[in-house]
Length: 333
Image (tube, rainbow, N blue to C red; front, top):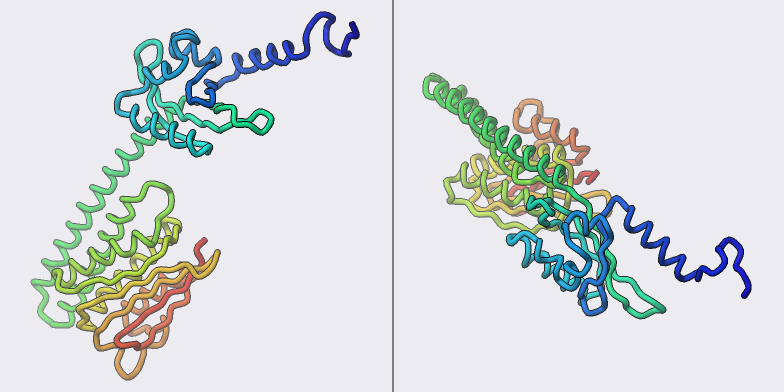
């Protein structure tokens, strides 16, 4: 019998590969599983057995799923079976009961594997993400409390401004205070919509229509309507905040100064790096002379929009088109 270099005499190379695989899998810092083409699991590494406090035989088939949290069971099995039928990788979090009866959050990643071009089943691995989930839950509580405090403070500011407006003697002072009240309302609407997003980015296709509806409701009492055509445009929180404040000014102008009973919003991606937001109305338009684009120092609202547009790196244009129309073109990043 010819000895293969590097392999002890009498040891089958296939057995050695199997032994090294088992050694690697059982000492890996993750829980590893394998399933057959019929979806039934037929192998679990040592960390999984230690976590569950069960033997291979107890975990075989769908035995592992008996420890999935009841609230996660249907979703977990559905994702597994759907991905399996489509031969696609999957990622899913779920709670699994540990040997001591404590449920831990796991992140399970599975992918199909093939032998000689033939589908052979799935391999998967799980990591414990309980601490991460607990931290995220804690952050959500803190954000909710922060949002609540901000809303209360804004309501207090609005109350003070309203009191000052009621006591003001001149029409100009009353007008200026009402404008301040509307802007604070707008800041609150922006804050509320941004609070709904927890993914790290904001999709303008959802955020701006929701924000515009809230502003229209506050400014018109529900008499004006919104027509929206939007595409998905994910952006940063800061960009979304600045754009939201600009939209607030535009909607207030359309309703209060343009006497518009309809506001039209369009959000679309121009290319990989730029997007466009357009807001128009069916009101009386800008009049005979359009305000100079973003530079009207005599108009506090125009100056505010110009400053916010610069912060966004946006180009702001105005035109009359069956009413007033303002368009913002800006870099997404």
